[in-house]
Length: 158
Ligand SMILES: [Fe+2]
Ligand SMILES: [Fe+2]
Image 1 (tube, rainbow, N blue to C red):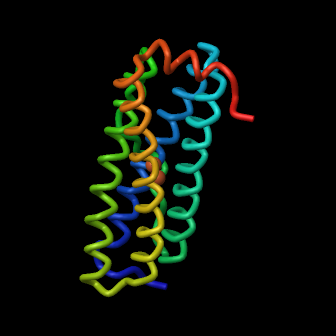
Image 2 (cartoon, rainbow, N blue to C red):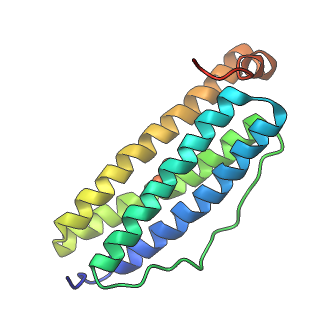
């Protein structure tokens, strides 16, 4: 199926954002593991895998629309030296992603591509959940302090 005007450009831009998120979150998860925050490592890794699923869905959909998935582009990866720094940097990625997704959803509505809009709305929901989770962690850190918060992250949730 041929894509409506501008849709493939949006899809490839979102793909770049997802690929960047995968890399950044994956390294953040590895750092959490390295620092011994097993519980946090699990949460961050599953967020990274969630972005991988987004990338997979985008690639499939770009191919379905007879486009070329652009796997070469990546945004700069920002790695936090501390857990709170990681959260802030990941939040910035999510905020960028969500703005792009909202623009793309609006564009799909304008050109009448409801299949793509539906797919992107699903991703938008996931991104909102990611933002909510990160904001909750930052708020908890603000309330109880980083030391207390991190001491709770040593063991994985059973
Ligand atoms: Fe995503
Ligand atoms: Fe996300």
